[in-house]
Image 1: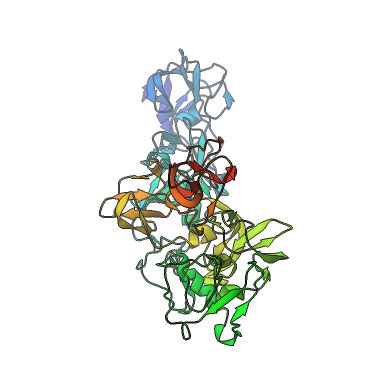
Image 2: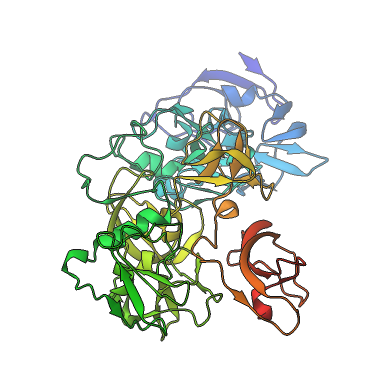
Length: 571
């Protein structure tokens, strides 16, 4: 067969070329590759073309440059815009864009792939395995490489073979491979295996209904049989509890909030061994305190009166001042004056009280204000209220199947709230699950005036709730990767710290006289907007947390006769 090719002045004859090792090697003038099969040859010159190269079209469409047709050129010096190699033989060229593709890149049709996960073609531009960092699995290893010329990222050939969907034993639903998770959620995401941030530029495996995201690397390298409870994701019964958990551990969340926590620390003080004096002088009060014992004084009714030490309902036996509205549990009377705490062992902590009944101190563990007793490190100004000071070092929590042990603050994110915590918390020694004291002590159910039903503390995944959550208080969209309070009857949800009662550990009552008003002012609890201000210019609400929302009940002074109010800073 004879061919008059535009690249050569003589006719070319199709013939069989010798196999490798049988004689002199012949190379194709177009692609410069060794010829081992049929080729066109000039009988007068040493000019060879692969049959496939000789039959290349003069104009082509190509996925590597889809704007215009590419024209076949020869004997022009060029630099390939794909692989950056220089040459002077055959090439395809776009005149309007001055875009050139060498024959090696063009002929690699089998090395241009369309991946269903990615929007653009991926080209294999280096024809041998090399060691490089893959933008999909985020690992460096030796493999064939494919490049997206639009997005400018490189991927292992093996990663292109990753399954679009995959099942894993540590999650109940199939996981889908996506290259951009930002289309699925408005929030930053953290890998449920390594707990590290996932960039929006990274491919991930995810379960969209559960808002469950994994690094590709973590999925590849983690055994399928590994248990990854992490608080909310294990492919097991949600209510299943590890049988190795000691039933005597404090189980959180508690149903009746601080009262149950008070009972926990009261257990640590053996009341049977305490000598009960009928009358005593206590360091916290200027008057003698009288003992009331249920066995001797059963005519005394246990009314809803709060202890001035722990700010919990009073119960027998207790001490009372006959001149003041001052009460102390027997256990609070016998609290140690000095404490070495495991989360602040550097210095001793001293038992203190506020100087005035309306002054409050903020507990660094639970972020709740108190005007009761608290332990304080004078060196570090670190404060723990009495319930937090006597929390056990190990607990069980409904959000996690393993026991949790007390830990110092961490730069890691709390698995409950999504915020970092610098003071103290609890962690699982088996998993990477960590929660702050603040999250750990949240009550299991609460009531709020925005909803007539009890609000339940709920944990992800929320696979049955496919719509976004919006907080009824701050009206912002909520991150479904973290805990929230929810009413299923009304389909109402609340941020943990929008609905949290920051003044639940304050004892109200008592009056003061001020020069600026003719009537007595009572120390009361009132609902106030976050940005409502007293006549002095101060906000009524002490914002202790950046995400504290706009509506909160807080302590103020109020005149019962004329509705006159003052904030605590005015006194």
